Each structure stands twice: as structure tokens, then as C-alpha cells.
Length: 142
Image (cartoon, rainbow, N blue to C red; front, side):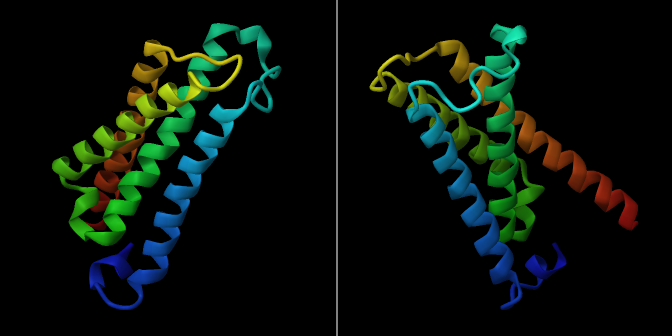
């Protein structure tokens, strides 16, 4: 992460990596929500309703983490600044809302307000996790 703070050429590989990973993850979410029966939908069926909620939470946790890492790669202080974290949470939550709307056009799928809330919680958890890791790293560097 130190290369990001230098603002030189060395920051570009990390910027491209985090930007590409974030866009790729968003594409994966879109692809999975486009499926009538998503891959692995039979796995862990014994969890029932909880399986769906944990899936949403996990997918959007990764999105929140990648989103904050991406903003931090473009602006070094962004990964620590609350305003940038709130922006990532807002954009990630909006993506969850749009994804649920998108599912209304997929045969056999429907939108769920609860899924939108779980998506937003996942994004917030991802951002909070990265904030916590950054705080621990700063404390260890002192």
C-alpha cells in the first residue's frame, strides 16, 4: 500500500488491479443474478433461507472491500476517510438495489426488499472490515 502513497508510476498497477477486480466482481454479481437457477443453488440447501442471506452478505462484503480498496488506490487517504467509505457504501447499496430490479426481468427470479437490506449490510461490513484492518496496521507501524 506504500506505493499508492507515493503517487508515482508504481501506483498504477495497484490502481488497475483494484479497479479491475471491483468491476469484475460487479460483473460476477450481475451474471449470477441473471441466472434462472444460479450455479450452486442446491449447495447447503439444509440452511434454507439463511443460505440466501449469507450468499448476499458475502458477495456484497467482497464488493464493499474491493470498492474501498479501489478508492484508496486512487486517493491514499480515501481508505481512512469516512466520507469515502460512505460513498462506497452508498454506491454499493445502489448497485444492490439495481441488481434486485434487474432480477425482476429474469424468469423465475423476483426482487426482494430484504435482499437489498442484506446487500447494503454486506457492503457496510466490507468497508468496516477494511477500516479495521487499516487501523490495526497503523497501530502496528507506530
